[in-house]
Image (tube, rainbow, N blue to C red; front, top):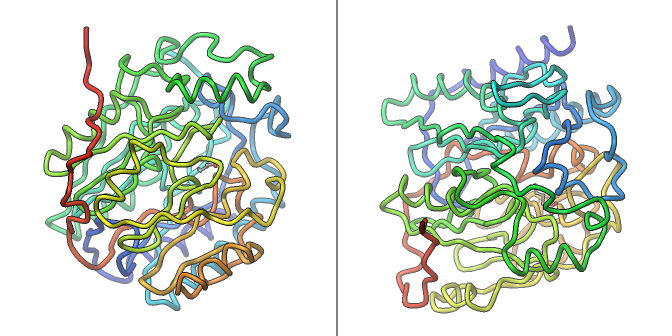
Length: 398
Ligand code: ABU
């Protein structure tokens, strides 16, 4: 009962105003956003890609299924407060429609005991200009998650005659999509082995079996899209994005310091035009740094997170401290306990907006993960006119 009532009151928010879909970057003034919901949030059943992501010593190992109700209730409470905060900044907040992620998820090729949730829309969809593109996803447990956004996207499509609704080819996710025995039981816990693999761009997903990408691997900086190659996005996925957006310049990045490389938004985070925050444990490769330097972008290190470990039943890293949401050129939403980050942002001239969120991390991340832009002011700017040192993306070779 609580679930249905909650969902109904969320979706009336979505009907308050007509929609225009428009967002080209991560920092122009935000006016309309999708904020995930924790209903039916589940610890995902293991599949090859998720197995490599969940740290060997995580309390999530060996368990799956519906998350404890008290954690869902707490996340709902925090979500409502965050939504109110966003509204107080003049931002329209919409909610997806929860499905029963506790159910078995199956395709003709595979099945897993349960799904994940719809708390973190950033992984599933991205807005590029007037287009909302659904990613392929790469965990079997998350294959059906896109349906949670159908009500909203259909509404946007009806209300905005210029909106383009696109879905990348749903992947087969056969066993063949992943490297067999990528990390055996012993190597899963061996940091040196993991780091050597990522240094050599050896990830669990095969590069050319089929295009795979999660939207949260994509950094939108106007005419340039920077996409992380890792466990959730392969080279075919990056190539597919480039062909899909021929007017954009797509760049592939990978970060040798990240032994669990999924999603770019705890690794390289834009704060405003010309300024990025970088995870000091996952520095940008020197050959990738050039295009930022050539175009006058400054990259500053993020401070050490306030916490030494993630909260219970959370497979993300402590670097969720960096997973902020930029509201406009001044305001950046930060987790309330992340005082070192707030101090750094103040020194850079921002006004941090502290919001209590740590108890929401377990559902898939922090503010950036829990949201997906629908409307930011402004158009498609060219922030990287100097492409002399562009590193070309990989193409398929027989
Ligand atoms: N979804 C972002 C998680 C990245 C990290 O755990 O660092």
